Image (cartoon, rainbow, N blue to C red; front, side):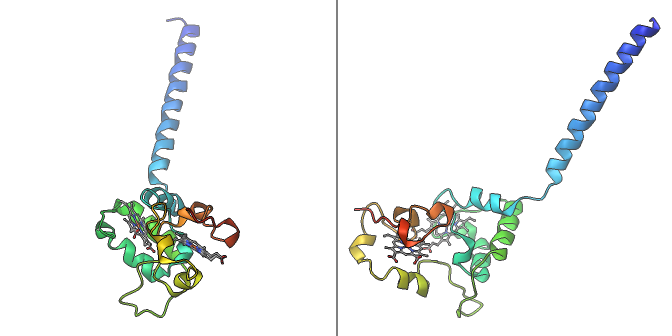
Amino acid sequence: MNTRLRMITDAIVWALSSVFLLVLLATSAEAAAPLDGASAWREECSSCHIAFPPRLLPAASWQALLGGLDKHFGVDASTDPAHGAAISQYLAAHAGPATKSPAASPPLRITTQGWFVHEHDELAPSVWARPAVRSRANCSACHAGAERGQFDEDSVRIPK
Ligand code: HEC
Ligand code: HEC
């Protein structure tokens, strides 16, 4: 092999192995990166209802909910342990103030909290029963910004 050709093949081999090494480094960095709690929460907790904002329940409630996802209001909402841990951490860090409930039995619903009942006391039972509403947990039926965590009165539209 003449030296010139030798130099070229060496350069190609060198370039290819650097690319290979970079790909290897990039994939292992991705695997080792910790899961982002906010994304995991949005991904896992918004398929059946809106991803209820963390501030709407105290940390003890989120902990209890996350601990029983396999029996979640009659459905199996379990996630893999890595996602569960990331979500748990995210919800605890952004949770609302503690309630007066005994530590052993924190509230599991937003919709049974005193503030929720109070904010919605003007709504007749027939409104909750409308086909477009059906459940108090169906926040987005009336709150246009629910999925973005916005519940201010200006964006409330009650379906007929
Ligand atoms: C497989 C479907 C499913 C998934 C996934 C799911 N949920 Fe639920 N969730 C439900 C159902 C069904 C209810 C009861 C809704 C109702 O009463 O109308 C509910 C209710 C709730 C409530 C109580 C709402 C209220 O009435 O105040 C909370 C809080 C809640 N879910 C949190 C979560 C969190 C956190 C996650 C993600 C870790 C999650 N859910 C994932 C199905 C699901
Ligand atoms: C049937 C329609 C309906 C549903 C479903 C509903 N809301 Fe409301 N919500 C209202 C109305 C009406 C008000 C009162 C607005 C006003 O003060 O004039 C209200 C008020 C609120 C307020 C107070 C807003 C403020 O700025 O004063 C919050 C917070 C809230 N809702 C959260 C929720 C959450 C969370 C859910 C779901 C778990 C939910 N709502 C489900 C209709 C609804």
